[in-house]
Length: 143
Image (cartoon, rainbow, N blue to C red; front, side, top):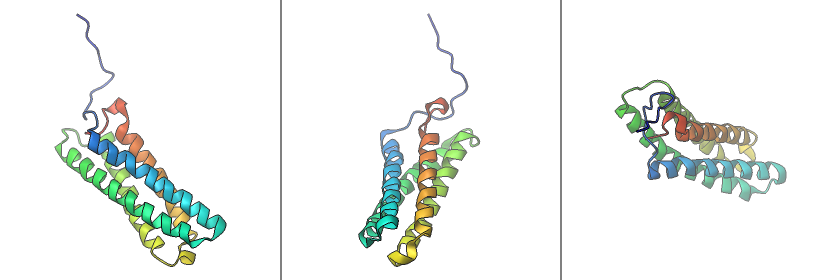
């Protein structure tokens, strides 16, 4: 009989399908908002800012539900330090800054720049980092 040894202890199980969809769904929505902000910055066509506002709202919905899953999993985890905590903190930071970004985009389109563009860049990077940390199989992925 052969046995497979792991490199280290796994404190989380493989991601569930719904949690994975929610986590991976937030990234393209925030990325789409960033691309719309760039288009608005270059063209000053107000509709790009409107599109970005809706994409941010969708990213907040997906990210908030993924954050809820992550918080429940963190509470249930035996080990609450390390990568599970980093994952939750990245999701929380992306959601809070995404909410601030939504408030910035709620202003007049002319008043949303350049703060909206800067926040979109930061939120997109945080969402990508959270997805990377949450779906990284070396640590067992998200629960």
